[in-house]
Length: 429
Ligand code: AMP
Ligand code: MG
Image 1 (cartoon, rainbow, N blue to C red):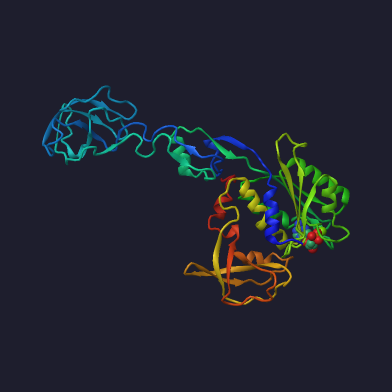
Image 2 (image 1 turned 45 degrees about the vertical axis):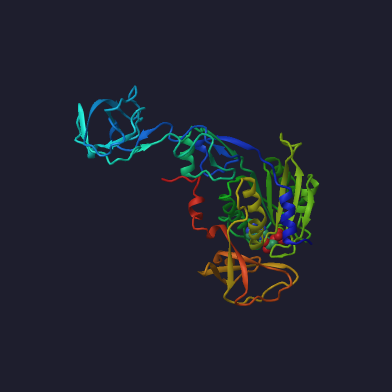
């Protein structure tokens, strides 16, 4: 049996290696950059006016104030510049965003003038460059705009559009297949027969992967038969970069996942992790180079225990970080906070590290106040539902006390933006 951190290190060594893709800006929202991006053009691209008014070349730039009366020799509109340079004593009408011509060194807002057409009268406040936005002021050519791993947010998409970056390099999302095993499993709308249970893991895990950016392909329910299990794993592994299997990884006579996976070419890296819940976690890889066209690439298989809390916590601790890392996420493990227990908890397994579910009852001095929740058996979903995150209690502790400090990892569904981010790809009417 290995420790949680040993298991995480092994998983890290075997990440699938999906390629990178160039996507158009229109498709890029929510992806992450696979390379740094530098500005190919300056921003703004030319000196332009920030006001509607007159671009002026004062007769004497050093004697501030005026009053001045200048000849109006033309106009610069947005998209339709004035051709030529201004001579001292000349002015042109100018619109916001229009090119400031050579020779003009400031823009006088229309409301500070008499608004004349042939000649214009005004006082100036003595500041050269007033109301001019200079070429390259915001971004110079070659300036870094965003780094590898940056999320393509609305403002970043806008900046890239402004700079003429039409295609961006992003991480290609890994494809995930999900197999839920168990002859007792039926669908959510089935007429339940004696001994049957509904497949809850399918819904927990698909929702849990939804906001990672990975593509969930193949989903299948598999009975506890060795041949069916092997066929399903083989097919899923051909179609996906990461295969998640729930159930069938314990020591029972009907637990076929390990044998079936190894029969179809998977190599085992570990089975059993010193953790509660989720001890029978199984991890294996298969060389994908022969099945698929790519270079060095493994197909990864996680045999997750069937109990819903076990399957969920294993997905949070091992699978989500892997997928997020593949997609360039700078903090793949998710959000953590310092925390302090407000109540003791004594249902610990001394031989294993334990994930204890907690609710965040408030935050004091940036420390989360934590309360353990009821109903955190490995077969239960109620505790998970009631909790905001978990703490990891090391092996060897028999109880933890009020006042003990632990880091709390917040569940992704605790994040305030979760319901927003998971809406990507949904249709609205
Ligand atoms: P197993 O890991 O196959 O021994 O399953 C452990 C427990 O989890 C059993 O009580 C199963 O009935 C239950 N279980 C397995 N798969 C699921 C599932 N997809 N949804 C809900 N419970 C499950
Ligand atoms: Mg089973």
